[in-house]
Length: 279
Image 1 (cartoon, helix red, strand yellow):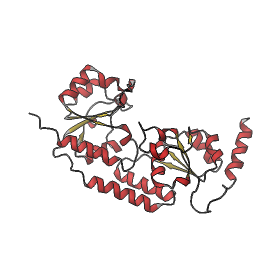
Image 2: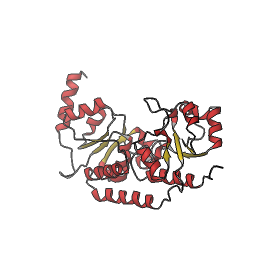
Image 3: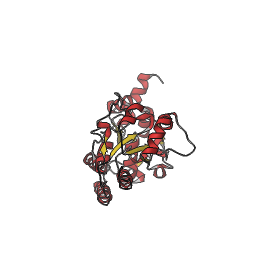
Image 4: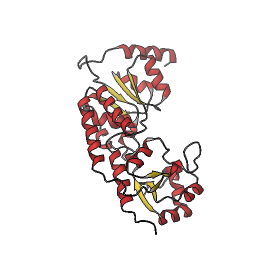
């Protein structure tokens, strides 16, 4: 189909009212971002959800893989989303920009979620999505669940120095959500002190010289080696890990805002409190 004809068709489709359903509140919701998927699938009625991303079904990176089973998925293409005729599209700050731009041009209601920098931002985003879905009470309940779990965690007895080494040697930058989780667990993020390149990656030499008490790595899937984890298998890094307490946390637990973030804080604090003082 020629581009001009496709654009005309999308405008017509977007302007057509969805069949059935009440006039108030979104009844046809499409999520275009994994973090949006997680909040939508936790907060919306299943009947509201037209589609989520294909990432939502992958248990290696998603905390809602079971909830996503059986739902249609998209890969972020404009024609996929427009064909569903949603009355609310929820996207992330880095969701396919061309698609988001096109959806706005044809008049589709788009809610773009930012990237929270701290737990207050997480709480606000949960409430924002719940309200947009027409279920503000569910957002309040989720925030209460998160806060109750956080309140039950015993922070590190000593302010241990923690170094996070995620795939491809990425760490958590000071001032971001990962940094906030470390501080909530009572830890000191040594990324504030050591050298990082402009992408947030930590050179092996900097990791060695950081003199961290606790090394935080991703919990890899058994039998699924990855080039992204190459540095973690380097002999020097292995020696560092043996000399320090190492805690593995699944990547899916701290990728997106949600109640699962409390599990990250709990594991960090437990690892710190199990760490014997250095001689």
